[in-house]
Image 1 (spheres, rainbow, N blue to C red):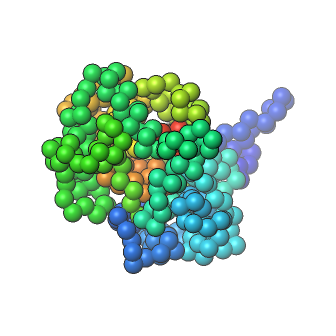
Image 2 (image 1 turned 90 degrees about the vertical axis):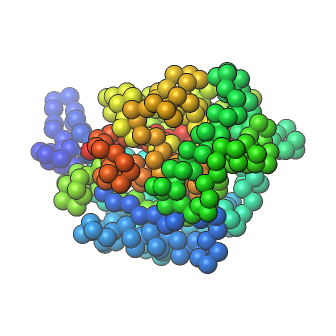
Length: 391
């Protein structure tokens, strides 16, 4: 808790009131299971236990040092109400403050960063997990659609992704070969750098020849739901400087949601993503083009291009050029196309970006000092969360 005179974000009294300075917050460690089409030999609790046991290694911290545990998952995907209650022991949340965020894990991280920055805590554990192999993901997304007009006609996340792709390709004057390039590149990146189970990287011809999923998208052009878990350890400045070399500072955050009704959103744009990015970048004090690293989520190859443009990394309709000429290393982990552990995808992006800043050589980077991280949720990527990181 901040106190008057505290050099790490203390308060100074004035005649007119008290001015509070927020503490700096850093990502000090992360852990992730391999992301697989099905973890058939492991239950949710096993995946969670694995990352919680791993995340403290090398930090000198233990569960006793953790002030709160925030987790992200879905009761609908898990098939039970208040499903996190069954995982509290595995999460190390016994006799601790625990809160469930029914949204992608990047929102849970935003919650945790805010809590530490306010001085209300010093160490937080953020966990996100998913086992879509045990669920029907189309039904999961359909349950989020308006029930009287949209759901009865079969509208769902896939349909929304197809409509977005149709409009984007038309506006950008691109054909499906562009989306095949994006897909092939991301699967190649995941096979090279990510922690993703991949039997074979599809080439562009295979992407185009794959079965139709949501016109004009083939199955491979959509993000692939996978099982897995991820944990991120957050800490205040005084602790981060002692346990992390170097600390990866959270310098900006933003989140926003678009209209629930898909038809009411602006066609060809992800305005909520634009708003979230503007908020985060304004706090960080720099433009997206300064980022050395970008880790972004997407429901399809087309929506990845839309996200990159919404973040400000490319002009409208020109994100495809980033595959050939970009000063920012984009989705070196592979991103969401080859690996989309629903409810954990954004937190994986945060963990990956932090690791790339700490160990750039592992990802073919000579040096890196800043990153932009993106997570999304909802049908047609209705909601967006953006972080900026620096070392």
